Amino acid sequence: MKTEKALEVLDRMRLPNGAYTASLSEDYRFVWIRDIVYTVLPFIQSPSEHYEKAYHALFDLFKAYEWKIDIHRFQPPIYLFEYIHSRYSTDLKEMHVEWGHAQNDAIGAFLWGVGEGYRSGQRVIRDEKDLEIVQKLVDYLECLQYWQAKDNGMWEENMELHASSIGACVAGLHAVKILVNVKEELIRKGEETLRFLLPRESETKDTDLALLSLIYPYRVVDRKTALKIIGNVSNKLERKHGVIRYEHDQYYNQGSEAEWCFGLPWLGLCYLEVGQVNQAIHYIEKTANIIPENWEVPELYIGGANVPNGNTPLAWSVSLAYIFMERMGKVNTKKAIT
Image 1: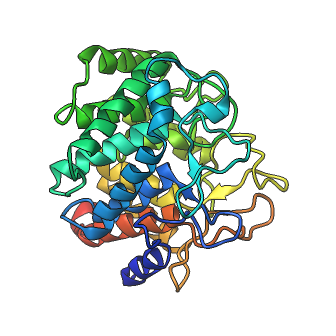
Image 2: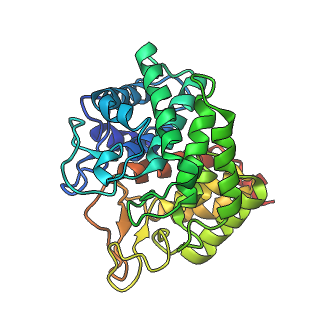
């Protein structure tokens, strides 16, 4: 399958300021911090203007709301609007709509993308001010006591202690400790909570699609835990057109849980991370089946309706599908099968 069209789709979603809109649909024509981190993953391995300018846009966003970060480096937020917002307009302004902004994983994801990008030769850090923002975000996570802080999680829903959020923060802190001051205790406390929580996602969810992030791209769990997570997600959540986020999910549920398209290539990428190439091969066809000819991969298939929803294309879906198909194109599948 030709993958060039995927990058063309992502280019159409790239904004003049360097950030990306989550989708071209009216409902999702906004900027999410987390979505950008995942959207630019195809460009992380070698210096890329797309990667660098996306992070420069996010740095500029954080600078615009630095006053808020400064407050909550010392005083934990109480109300949702006090948290660093997770969603913005395309000109990177806060949306004055009530939202589940307590998303610690988004801050962890940004820090991870900065640190990993820097290691890969990306010019994500422009000056001392950018480094100052990184330090302040580390301080923000410390003030939150992220390792025991309930948040809205990756899916922006009920406030719980989420393993996926804690893992993102652990990954982010690890990634930037070469750039700024990160107390080892901050990382250790997060790792201890993960050992207590995993392989569960939270008190109410024994497994969740978000847990795959701890394997790819963050790589913060050991092989034994990774295999448990992959097995639980595959056995309990995988469906024909994608992966449901968790059991009894009500988002776009018309009789059954919505099937998220990026879940299939994400599972494939996780199998590659743990060296199970034979398992990953099974996801080539599964992923190809959710990629249309124009590469406008949907967010999800509506549960019970067997049709995509309107958030098409979803940048994150296009990105993960592209990465997986590219990586599998380089694998000697015949040798792997034998």
